[in-house]
Length: 83
Image 1 (tube, rainbow, N blue to C red):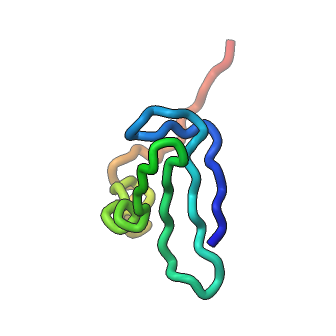
Image 2: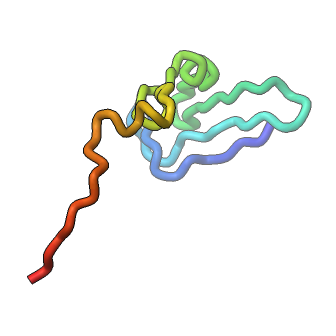
């Protein structure tokens, strides 16, 4: 497992800056990331946060057909004059 410090991150428990490191699994290891603080010993599993995170609905990832996309918008061309 690789251990890398994360620049600029503040520990949520003790508030120390630049003391949080990320444990990155290598090939063949369990796909599960952990971060910890070397100052206070705080440890957190990132797999729990990633599993609970859901994608927010946006106009890009909603199920729409090409016919539905232009229904809400006026698609007629407009002439613009620049003075």
